[in-house]
Image 1 (cartoon, rainbow, N blue to C red):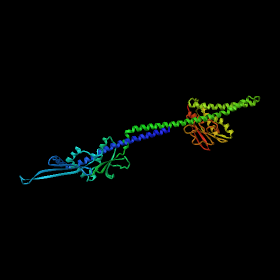
Image 2 (image 1 turned 60 degrees about the horizontal axis):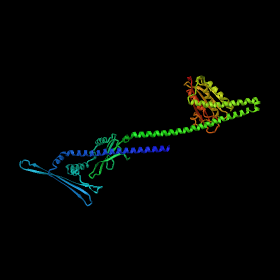
Image 3 (image 1 turned 90 degrees about the vertical axis):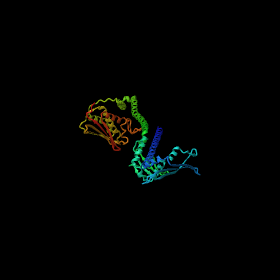
Image 4 (image 1 turned 90 degrees about the horizontal axis):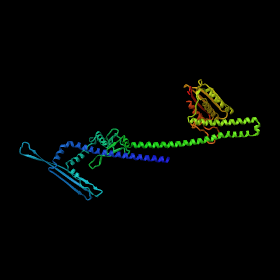
Length: 510
C-alpha cells in the first residue's frame, strides 16, 4: 500500500508539473506574440510621427514619381558567391521661376533628388541557391516611401530615447495586444538598453528579475545594421493566476483525489493497528480471565474432593469450612461474569438504570465497607472526610456503588503494603457533588493516563499477573458516571500516588 501510494503521488506530481509547464509555454507564446505586435506598432507609430513635418514633401515626390525619374537596379554576385542588389533612384524636378519686372524672360530651376543603397540577399539553405527577388521587394525599392522610411529610421536613431517613446504609449499598445491574446492580468513594462539594463522609461514597481520566465523581452529598436539597441520588457506580478487558470479545475480534482486516497490510506493503517491492538487486548483479557477462573475452579475441585472423603464427612466443622469455601469461590466467579455481562449491556445501551432519590454519602459508606476488610488485612487504612453539605440526588445506587467499589479496589491493588486511601467529598459552586479517591500507591505513567478507561486495558500484558484483574473495572466506572451525566478525571504522579475525582450533578432526574 505504501509503495503504491508513493508511486501514485509521484505520478500525480509529474502530471501536474507537465500540465503547469505546458500552461507556462502556452502563456509565454501568447505573450511573445503580443509583444511582437506591440513592437511593430510602436515602430510604425514612430515613423508616422516622423512623417508629419514632411507630409507635403512626400506627397509632392509621390505625385511626380513617374515624371523625370531615372531608376536603376543591379543584381551582382561577387567572388564569394554573395548576391547583392544595388539600387539607385534619381528624381528630377524642373519648374520655371519668373524674373521680377520682366514679362517675357524666365529662369528654369532643376531639383535633383538621389537615393541609393545595397541589399544583401541570403541563400536558401535547402536548395543551396539564391531566393528570387519578390515583386513586393522590388516594388518597395521602387517606391519613394522606401527612401523616406530608411531616412526616418536613420534620423530617429540619433534622437534620445526619452524623445521617442514614453511609458503611457508602451502600456496602452501592449495592453491592447495582450487583450487580443486573451491575457487580461496586470503587467509592468520597461525599456532595456542593449546591455539589458533598465532605462528611465519603465512602469512604477517594474521588476527586472534574473530568474527565468519572469521577464519577457523583445527587440524594440534596432540600429542601421539591424543590431538591437533597445528591448521592450514586460513583467507580470500575478502571472501564475493566468498560467494556472485554464487547468485549475484539473489541479483541484487531482489534489482532492490525492487527499482522499491519503486519508483512506491513513484510515486503513489506523484501523488495522486498532484491530491489532484490540486483538492483542482481547487475547490478554482471555488469558487474564482464564487465570482468574483457574484459581477458584481449582479450589472448588479440591473442596469437592474433600467433601467426598469419609473423614471430612464425619467432621461437621470441616464440612462447613469446605462448603463455605465453595460458595465463596463461586461468588467470586459470579462477580467476574456479571462484570463482563454488564459491560456488554453498556456497549449495546441495554443496561437498565433505576434512578431514585438516594443519599450519596450512604452509597460511599457502603462502598467503603466492601473494601475496608481487604485494606485492613494488609495493615492499611481508609480515611473518610465527608464535608459535602448536599448529598442527595437521583441515581442508581446499585451501579454507582459498584463504580465506587472498583475505584477503591484499584487504589488497594496498586498500593504497596499498608495502603492508605483517603476519601473526601465536597460541593462546588455549580451544585455538584464531588468525590476524591486518593492513594499513595506507585502512580500511573503519564502516557498511560488516557488509556486506563479503555475496555480491557491493563498496564500489565500477557501472562503477567502480579496484579489481578481483567481491564473492565475503570471502563465500567466511566460508563456509569457518564450515564449519570457526571465526569471522572484522574491525576497521578509516579511513586507518589493517584487521585480519581468523580463529579455528579445533584437533583439528577431519572
